[in-house]
Length: 411
Image (tube, rainbow, N blue to C red; front, top):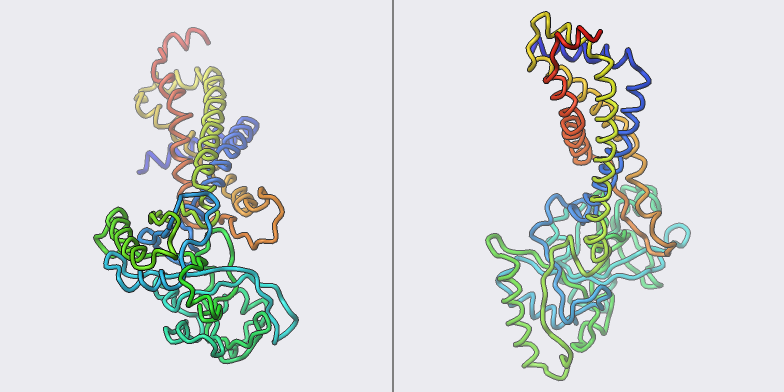
């Protein structure tokens, strides 16, 4: 450890001795590392963690009925959803939701919000605990006509209601219907409609007569796999159940009724239906840019090694082992890469939040921006270390082949 610290101190002195070379190398690598870590932050916030506020989404699947499409319509009616929810054994939970804009009035100035009507088990299936109050109850889903209970998001509670701790039990109007606030979701949770921000949740009873119409397909459905059950097994069971429903109600199911389950990272509902193909391609392009940056810095190190031939020859002549010399050069490369990673992380804290700006202007409440969290920091550190090996190994190995006597005679 002591010799490693000596190598680090010597490497730091040598880099400070050549500030021009160090600055060019750091900026070149920072651009490549920054581009890679930025796109990784976008992948992390959309494909790897599609529902903010939920630590694990690997057992959640979207339930699609009919032909697979990039522009699917909501595939289920409420009676079909209830039949599947009550009969399935491969899923531990099955939730339904439908989203649209709504007008919020009754407390402060009117505000246009993005709302969802959801099944009563919505928060239970997702594993979301309320920040204040409670979540929806089954009786509130099954009794149309009563005053709906609603749950609002943490951001709406802060921005529209000023974080009022006594908000629970207060009444507001949603599209001129009187509703009662019963809960506030925890910070960060914005719903399961991937890529969009939801501001409030109302029970399905809010939709009135649609609950009784089997031929009215208006609900998107999300399921949670039981432990030990694969997606293929659950898909097979749901297809059998759906065929039973079709045979029982043939007039309401004249179109295709094949059920497909998809993981959330390629969900047909939301932004991931487009992003799961595009973002990996962008990550590949960023990796190519990083390799080019590594090649440029490696060339700089090779040119610099010519000027350091006398120094290397003296160290070899005085008894330094070739392995110690290679380690010294790799430590210099590692310091360069870590400095570049630090600059790249500073860039990523800004660029991670620019993803939504690449989309055409829209009235939808997009939530696609990444963030420079601990996962992105770890990825940036890993990329930096690998980068140090890529651009530093060849110059170090070239130095290992040097004949010290020949180098001294040249000097």
